[in-house]
Length: 403
Length: 222
Ligand SMILES: Nc1ncnc2c1ncn2[C@@H]1O[C@H](COP(=O)(O)OP(=O)(O)O)[C@@H](O)[C@H]1O
Ligand SMILES: [Mg+2]
Image 1 (cartoon, each protein chain N blue to C red):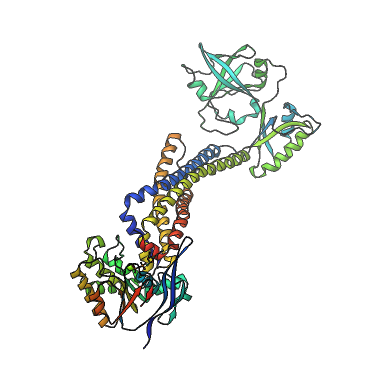
Image 2: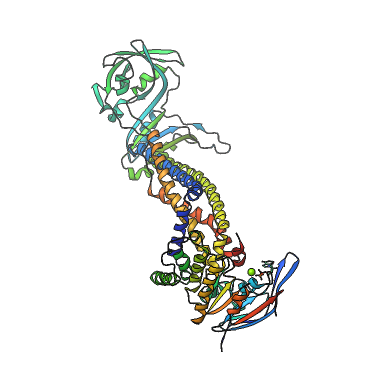
């Protein structure tokens, strides 16, 4: 028997039993839709997050005290304290272009005309932050000798308070933890920067002051840097440069904990995790499919039972086992293909809907369609194997006697 | 003269749990080309069982059955299916048509399993359906046909692959007398054109028209 003739038979039986065909396909439709949704949403997350990373500067490296490293046996490790000495050490490393020590203070209250807002503030060394200096929109940037001056990000100045803040305005910062409070003069406003980077972040909601200003504002005993941003000259040599930085820091920070992050490896790491999440989600879809497969087994068994007499007739007029098996396998395969296609369409629709709701790029990728369809057809064919072989093995005399 | 069919020392025993039920005992029959043979006997005597063995739908418990001098007891399932499809035409009392296929597809079916090209199948099925007066019933499904029409579709189907022997198990059993006579006329004509026919029947006058009557009682020829 030619496959084409078997296909025609299958078509005839679908035509005759539309309702049953659709009902039996429901499990596969849902399963395939689930696989497509899961894979697409997973893919969308990756694309969305990579998009955030896409804007960032890949030649920036961050040196941070602390870390996840376990202390070696018998040698307790303390967190490294980063100070001006480290800045000069890093500036001397071959391949390093610029070194920017930073301090981040969280939960600072800023008061302007009797309004209070909660903010994070960055302390910087202005002479080393040309990049920020270049984004001054109004007023001036900080100088290293400034004490009670601050520069505001675009949103902080223009959107955060009821009234816009202009250069020359005075604001009060207070630090609830130590109950200190200091008046500052706003000397400059930065321009609107959409630019965001994973390690740096957009400057729109940031506030900058000098390190000495921060130290006296916070009034803490041992002021040291939260982290040091380092620009390397050549992104391709970033790994070598990091090695040299580690070697240089080794002299003053033996057996102390610190980490050097580069954005590229963070991106890789996050993507890797997301990929696992994506296939994990796909796995959930696969379970749905397996349940759909059981549905197909049921329906095919029912079909075989209903058609016992027919199988007997086919055998009586010359069909062999292979002919009967092929017929039922093709029937369940087509069932899988048809319901899989419906599932892909439904799944793509749902994935699109989710991406609109979740506001990340809709990516119903070709692989997720192929994987979804493949799983649908595969599940259906595997589900058809047992019923088909049961039909094929049927004794013709017994089958003809069935009513 | 060549035997189209030769049955030698055939036994058939059904196993019902621990119970052995002998249905056919030591059957020996030879049928020559062009013969029209009637098999007669009381209900339950084993006639259908014998026809199923001849038709390669079942295997004997012992003994041999030769069709065109080929020992069918040596053949595997695949080869038996081929014999059923090519060398044997089977007409049943209950027609055994596929209800969801139309007349045309029912008649085409045996040719599909012999991988005959579509165009050839179409021509042959049409030719036979017209020959049996069903030219205007080709796209009717069995439930839309009368008993006589159904049996004519079944006869057309049994002949499509030009079998060497035609088996008919009480082909008029489900038909009224007049329709039964029409069907018998078809078999007579086929036989006069050279077809070898073995037919199970209850009715005496039908038996009388045949060349030879083989009588079975309690699974034995008498
Ligand atoms: N598959 C079977 N299993 C057990 N007994 C059977 C089977 N088929 C037929 N028989 C028995 O064999 C005997 C002959 O049956 P059958 O050949 O149909 O007789 P007939 O066609 O002459 O009426 C009956 O007693 C029947 O009950
Ligand atoms: Mg009988």
